[in-house]
Image 1 (cartoon, rainbow, N blue to C red):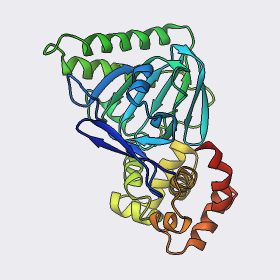
Image 2: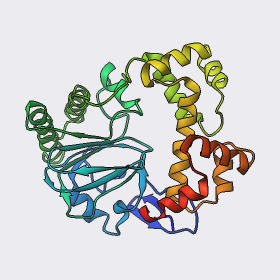
Image 3: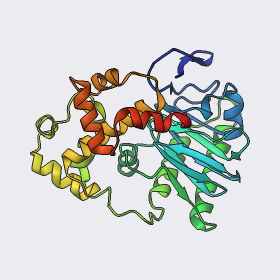
Length: 305
């Protein structure tokens, strides 16, 4: 059974319909000195969500950054399970589907912020509009780890100042520095330069996030953005190594996988939600991009819910 998490003025409330979308959490800390930002730790977060909602698959509409400092566990993000140990850095972006470790397995500082909160700098604005950054990195005992830990300590120190003395501007600047430091971490093992697509790719990805359920035609995106399909293809090839149509289809296939694995929504409803007029067409599309049919994929992932 899927859960729908409803945000209220008192906190969050979990409800259990028969079917429904992947449960989602809105940004609503119980008490915060500034709007759009909170820093806490995983143990406090688990205590706040004592109904186990964090250990079930869900997605959030804000960013979260976590640095594991204690324990060992796992964190699942979009069908990839990441082992977590001291030094693991997690950055989960709005819309990604995730599942936390069991309470007490790991602990560490946990930052939550709305996309509009960090200081508006060219570098931070670019990072906040990327959907391809790695969800998990493993830091060594080096100056990068020390720099991130120091920034997290400064954020917590500012956030917990006496009431009325917390500076939103300082928090925004410190958070911006944290994001920029994360961005320059080594990215070993990656084969494409996601920055290479430049503004064209960034604008395209923004439009894709809004429109993947209504259009899979590269021509539609090119027309709305004022580019040619060739221009979009060049940007996508530079950023991902794949042409624009493959990037579009991959985004649709990912959402289909999320809905099949993490909800009880009928396949026919998922097909319509993703813009397919006939379930059979959706089935062919899904098999072509994942190597399996929707029903088999759902059965294979039911045990992970």
